[in-house]
Length: 63
Image (tube, rainbow, N blue to C red):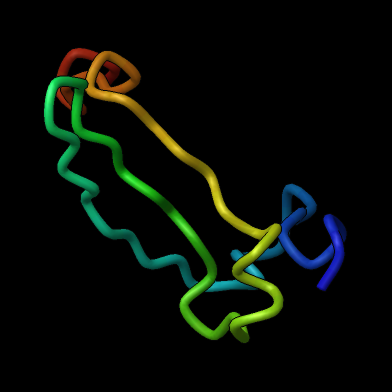
């Protein structure tokens, strides 16, 4: 899987569905790992994003 698998043009829909898992860390902020839901074990080694608690905003505040 390459970066091109995750990019879309303005007229295309998403090319990959994403899944997530919350990682609870003792003594540190929890994290959310976001990754392609159909990724193989090998792809999961490099195809993920980690987000921390202050990386998120309320959806309504962005509309």
